[in-house]
Length: 87
Image (tube, rainbow, N blue to C red; front, side, top):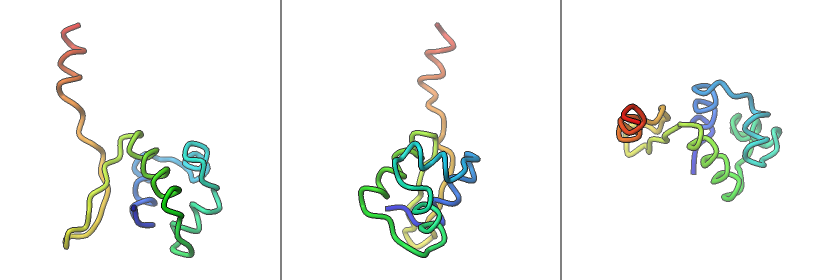
């Protein structure tokens, strides 16, 4: 499950409006905005859909584990880059 702050931060990193995340995840724009404000929670399947779409866009979610949860861009896959360069 991602937190409202993680959702806001992830969208900011990839410069997506809530409407784009809505279209790609199937979760209503209103629900995403309310979730990010902390006014409501997403259902488990909605949260999973949002997370999956953001991960597909290159976001990695960092668990809190006592240090604070966060988001970052996923490191590029060097094996894929190497094989593309040698092709």
